[in-house]
Length: 441
Image 1 (tube, rainbow, N blue to C red):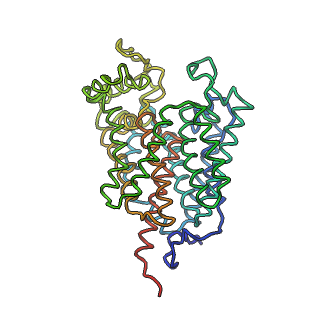
Image 2: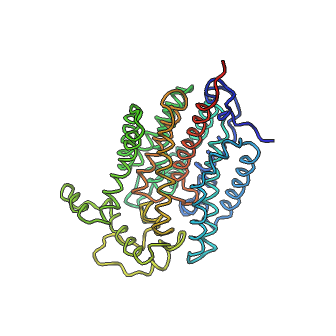
Image 3: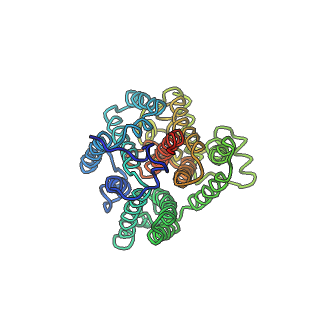
């Protein structure tokens, strides 16, 4: 018999999310596993293949995690939460993924990658639907972020050859920058940026000491990892959401959180699609290439024009003979044969699923979360949750214009975005049910 998900229990006079007590361990453990990974102190070559087909530990680990998540969704999650999670638009992504497997150069490898990606989606849905009170969510986030920070700091100070970029190899330019348990400092900074938001949320909701410690530890890690992008978009996300919280008109509220994503998308990938934009930007910032990313985007877009409707299949573009055997264009400064992805989630989505598939993802990953956000009242615990989740969503959505992580197996940045999207969906669904429920006299 499944447990009643008290977030959506309309029998309570006050929002059930305000109640205390409960078991937070399922969510805490799931969050920790995905953020820490199954190989937290392994060689970066192994970590970078986390969830990959050649790693038995990850195969067994994420396979087992998927089964546990399915069990918890069936046995421990309310029908109301399941209803909120099975949105028809979300389900439309499944045939797009299936088509991307069939059209891939190596369908077996693509299918394995899709299954691992699906496990991470399940993990986010399960973790966010298991807590029944605010205190459970705070405890789950405290445990998961605390454990992840511990592993990352242990890697930096006790295993620096694993936790800090070294002055040799392909990433020598990042020598001395922290990466913790992750394969690259860019991944680490986005994870820690999310932890800054979690820490502040925890501090404001019952655990001030724990929350401030997490916020401080994550902030120091962001600085030591040295990502200027994260140092810019994190405060920008916080500021935009702070402004949106004061707005009551839904359309203007939605526009406030959507505009930064559209603007950054326009000046990044959009500037390569429409060259006058890039020329205008370069008139103010001469020579700007977003650390060479414009070369990758130019190369990828030219190939996308050959297969715009269906793309090239899931994970069937970068690191394949199509790119690895390509002649390096003379006008590109970045050797595209050295890149594992396109450093832009939307470009890589189009290369994998085609332009129609990428547009569908835009509806699911951008339009739906904003629609859910504007439907949640600003007051009470629902308002607090909405603020946390939409800030985390905006932070990762902005990052998607400069990094690739959509459906990227066990990528913790992708997991962070999923947490935000699922959190907004459940909070919106619960708020609507509570407001529609008849009040007791």
